[in-house]
Image 1 (cartoon, rainbow, N blue to C red):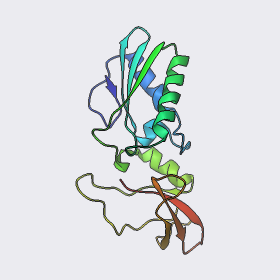
Image 2 (image 1 turned 90 degrees about the vertical axis):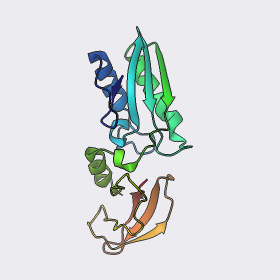
Image 3 (image 1 turned 180 degrees about the vertical axis):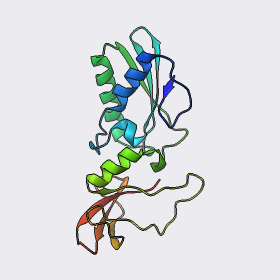
Image 4 (image 1 turned 180 degrees about the horizontal axis):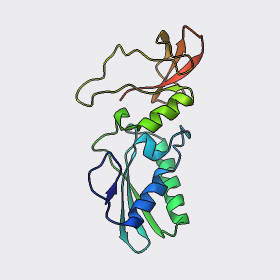
Length: 172
């Protein structure tokens, strides 16, 4: 099994590496500026036989409605590469964390106008009083407008310095 940086197993074959890169390049259906690899939800891929592939995918939270679209998009991309049978398994453990978003993914979120999540430390509760930096002007003088934005994993904030509203990808 070939895994992403969040996983442990070493690459088994060049084909698995290539297919993992293809599956990882699929855009997130809710945040198309990010690939599934950059979001950190693609956990692994294994060739189980000629034309047969198994993929492990972890949702950003249990019940995430985008997991079905992610699975279908991965299946489509791998079918286009000659894989006749693609099985996508939803894996809930270890759970996804915003710490799984790559540095490139964080950069793209900010460039897209979404404040990236801060580090959670992965060993305990998320700090409540996080300073959220405006992706437009960089000010930390921001106000929470709504705990939920266009998706459950984002909050809506406004910068008090430049007065622009922006999404903040919540720490999980």
